[in-house]
Length: 339
Image (cartoon, rainbow, N blue to C red; front, top):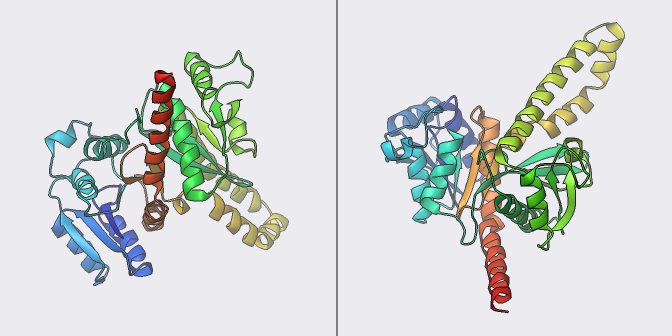
């Protein structure tokens, strides 16, 4: 397996990207890690880490797209690391790519070079959120600022197919995020999405509210990317805020400090389950090639786990499963139209 990483993406590139890549390459010696970016900078980071691993390669890409740049930068800088990563996957020189830089440009680069799976109208980011019994998955969590009902309906179909193919979730329960569970709630976007999903074979539970995301009643929550990204960032902020509140309360007095010390193993377990770094990156649904979108502030732990997500998607043939899904949907539509 060959996995390409945009080594110039993220807030602390290339140092953090290289560190995470070294950790993954060392743990998976049969996989090849391709670090894409400015060769001199990557080589310097590898030297600083004392890495001489044979399964790490460098693919030179002299240009860099910054975190604040617009999508136009992909055309203005054709030799940048994002474009080159996507080209490697397109050319079959890499099985997957991990991008932790500018999200808008990352999504655009993937669609520009890899195109979308035939039948898919819009790509969406699928993100897991922890709950007491596993995870709920939200799509879209930031690939598109606006969406149409047919886009959200496809997000639901792709998410359900992905969970079944990659994680073995049988018949995932799908809900549409709204401001209430009643039929009269929501907007034109959510109500039309619900109508479209009723015509599919997804396991639809109807409208779900924000608190339902963490309940066992739903596996997949669909929404537009603007709303989904706000939900995601709120969850990240809540996790950080709760940890600070708990620490303040634990340190309030002798008995609370003693109780906190005794509870350290439990707190460590909670931290492990809710730490976004242990997810690493999110799958970009709908693109005709394995693409993992990572956080801009990823550290070496997050980068390592982003590689793991990419490898899992390759091993389980996630993209092939989505292709088959939409091939069968197109056949059903054609049959219905002919009838």
